[in-house]
Image (cartoon, rainbow, N blue to C red; front, side):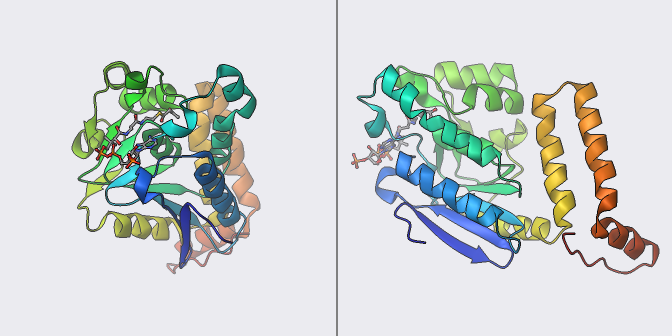
Length: 257
Ligand code: CAA
């Protein structure tokens, strides 16, 4: 598959997608988003891929939605085109997606990182939602995901007054999983993704789905959802294998069945 705005690689069981518009700090134009979603779906459909890493460059994960593409847009065009609905497809990916983030993660870039399941950040990363400076506000999940991740006080300050977070602050506030040196952030994300990709595939998918359900459901509904998924896993060979391996003190061999 030929892509213009991304580079796609496979590292063992991990699919790697690199955003690649260096001259625009990986600003998320429609073409890039379509290519990125297509690559994610391709990896999700590939049974040999157990996790996806999404990254940019050391300088920029992504500087946000493409402002030049949106500058002249009208409300009606925005509504008809509804390009943010494309983002729902990221949410539908069933394998874990890990963002490897460095440099700027601003606006849609911050929202894209938050759309992933985990974030590994380099110590140079800056997270921000600067849309207020453009006379707009976050439109791809920023007001919702940031508030859930860092709490109302910090989210308000970031969204209403363009406060940026350093990588260490983002870690303190629970936005990212870990902060490492800029030289190794991608290797670290690939290592983490590789570990997850080596685990029981059906259980990984249902566990991801269940954690995400916590965003959508009441506690009672969420607990019921979790319990059903838990019981469902007893129909898999991997459950028999995993528990038998424990009992017999050997290492489990997962089949994804
Ligand atoms: N859209 C389009 N082009 C962008 C861009 C964006 N979001 N961000 C950077 N670029 C382009 C610049 O226009 C510039 O291109 P030219 O060389 O052709 O002029 C190139 O990338 C390099 O950028 P700078 O010269 O500005 O680089 P810098 O190092 O001086 O500054 C920066 C870096 C602070 C990130 C600055 O580029 C910036 O503020 N970018 C915009 C950030 C922003 O406002 N993001 C929110 C977008 S709206 C959004 O995301 C809505 C949503 O919720 C979905």
